Image (cartoon, rainbow, N blue to C red; front, side, top):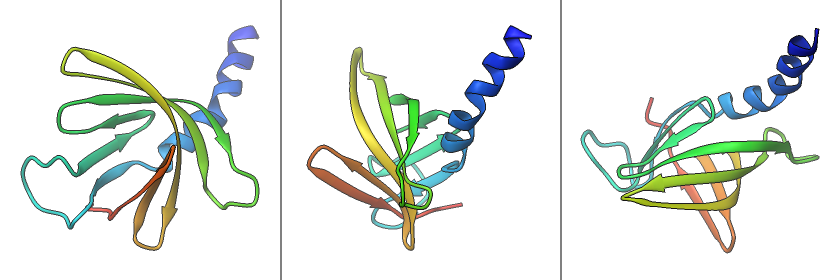
Length: 108
């Protein structure tokens, strides 16, 4: 019973992360390796030389589909973390970080 409660508690967070699944690239979708390309699968984001985990999702009230995450990343022998807001926009994925906002058109 405790396991079931634990799994049920995780479901909203997993669902929030999975709603962003796909491949995105700023500047247009091109084949091959690119610094501007990212892919999201479940709670993982993969960039060219780094990967990140989306943790502790919080739905943003009155912003349809917007979710705030703790993001922990590693790449090239380093680790770092930050907070990010993700949401689907008219032109693709919108990612907002401290002082920055990016739009990544969907490629798939």
